[in-house]
Length: 244
Image (cartoon, rainbow, N blue to C red; front, side, top):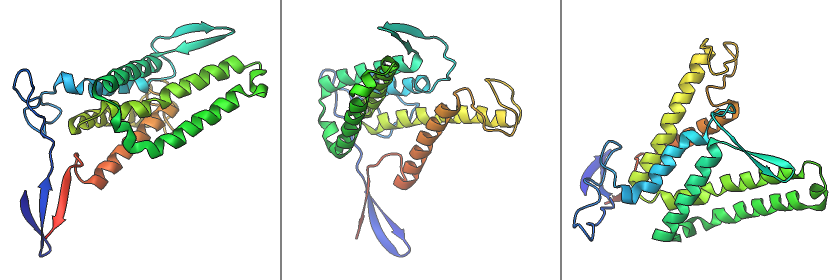
């Protein structure tokens, strides 16, 4: 704790940092410093989930022209699977393992958000399986789209199971911001005449190497992270100010 002054008024700033306990088997601390940066040592045992999520970010936002795809035959329709689908599957499996190992109590804090999400999925299921939709010639395509939507929606449950420490949050948010920075830089270059990755004429809205919709989604997430960081004023939400 340290005392500071602000316009004549004094207040205490108490930093509540979570210091990991010593490893029960080796007697050594998991982290060498509670405010370890990205360049510090990260314990694979405790941050594997966050590392998987951070590495999956570039694959979740890929161009419509995928590097590879796998066509899965489902009845009369073909389900096209690509890098994003594989990334979602890896994240969900890792989240299930993390939940089984460390518990799922963290999901309870945001239960008010889960109810509207579940209601939306139920509504979409009703719209997908209603008689008029089942008899539609494109029912198989709609069904595949619904299950893909459910898979991406489950990412909302996976994040709190994988991101459990301030260091994990820093790792994941940095991945979003850095990937957005790269994609936005390419789009800006295309705007001024960089004729690669399917660029449109200079001065037009550019797709970068992600495509218009994926670039917009990634930029929106990165902007949200930036706004949250500004509002919190610190990277770790563990600073408590108490007036005296």
